[in-house]
Image (cartoon, rainbow, N blue to C red; front, side, top):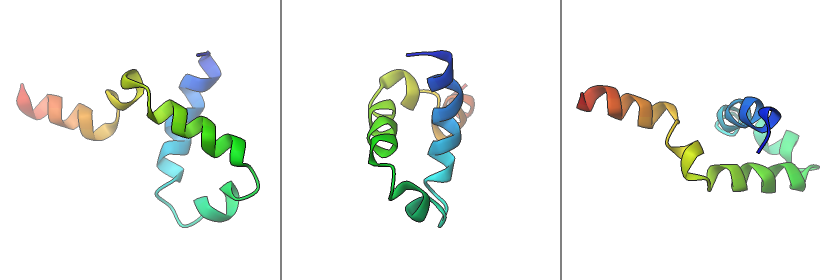
Amino acid sequence: MTLADIMVAPQLDFLVATPEWQPLAAPVPNLVSWLGRMNARESFTATTMERIAESANAA
């Protein structure tokens, strides 16, 4: 895990929800695989916007 991973993963995670993701990701399967590994990390999923909102509402 590097600072680059921490900075880029959230940006790409948002990009996945856009129509542009499929054509951009098609030629770079290693990037798609890396993002999948990042999303498998508990520390990453604990800091998604949805999880942060849940925590804020629970407080």
